[in-house]
Image 1 (spheres, rainbow, N blue to C red):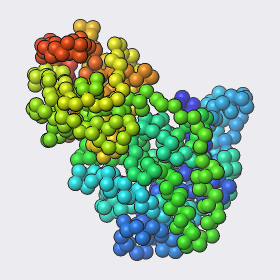
Image 2 (tube, rainbow, N blue to C red; image 1 turned 90 degrees about the horizontal axis):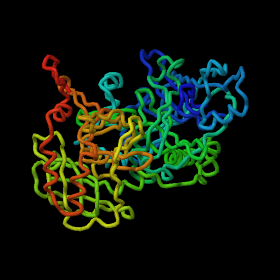
Image 3 (spheres, rainbow, N blue to C red; image 1 turned 30 degrees about the vertical axis):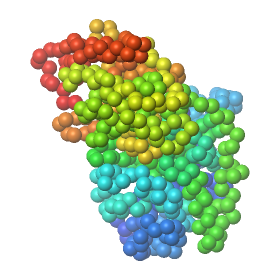
Image 4 (spheres, rainbow, N blue to C red; image 1 turned 180 degrees about the vertical axis):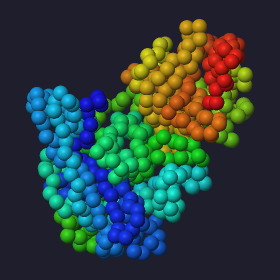
Length: 555
């Protein structure tokens, strides 16, 4: 998206609420489902502080709906959203039509295009839960693993509301009290089941909620669908970067010139054992609407007919052409390596050869390698014998495993021979989530290629890399070539902060000769060259510079 593309064309709204006499309000984002009917879908967390009775157990399946009368009469809601763009200037209709394909409106001083904002009063119709999301979420994010979905500042602001994460699967249905222009009356839906890991998605929300909407309203972020879990892919994870206040915003796909709403943002930030994961959590909008319609039938809500019309049937993307992308085809070649103490990732180079990191093995001579074939939902566990592991003193954190059994029909990646700084790349691995829903995909660019004596010795990317990603492959998006093996992300030793979007991989070109000799002749002696690297290579991997007076790196 170029710098002149802003504003997700009236499909997002920012929302704030307050109670008479209440000193603080809360705000988040929302999606306008139907402009003509004035129906808005948002996340429900900001409404729970205003409930008359806060003692309910909102994790119970039977507690799937809360009506507006359960809130104080003094509750006021304001919804701010863009009006129809006003175009003045020299941009022709054909140019506007071409640029509006993504549902975005060009803002340019040359075009003279501007978008008006308007604040509306809103009415709360109901809160509805998505038990399918809660079930999958509880299974995926074990509390014992230290998962946190709010920052320290949010904990202080929301207090006990975030304590048990019991509000994450609740959503709010609102109705605007004043009409909107109908440039796009209804949102088009894309079922989450139509997307695959690695599919490009866009997140649209209003960071910081009601704070300065002139600047932050309808901010757009681009990423990929990193992982899915649960019934009909109800739990969505994306590396599209979002900020607090984006809760309730939309996750959209864009295929064949069709912009479709896939999910609603539930948590823009998450941590695991104090490590920032760098992924955004969302819920499939299809299942939210299914629960919404079922609940409204039971309670005979006046807007039931309008809600029925929103069901993703007639206004659902169904005819989008589906083609396999290189990264999707290569995901089955990524394996989980379990040493019994920790897990990591690896990549199959041949049916019985796995490349991973030395530190994943923890000194073991044999490990369990878990493989999920393309046509199966179940893992197959094969014992992997360590045929080579680089020495602790070597900067190249590499190990080679030979499987005691063949993995089956797994695609073999092509090894890259050159690197292009700035090219789009993917990291695939079992970081953070382990084997619970297969390897995750994160996207970024190859941000740097560090050389020693004109040969690449380190790759840097902006992909999100987490604990458990070590040993996983770095693929080029366009060609699908294997560029390198992920070795680590970055930690600031002085503060303990982890930066998942600054990470380091070992270039596969370092291994070309040794791998060729081993694959052709079974000769592992060639790998010993990885233990005899020069000091300048070690200095690169230690993040140290040559001059003695320079302070040592804190990373």
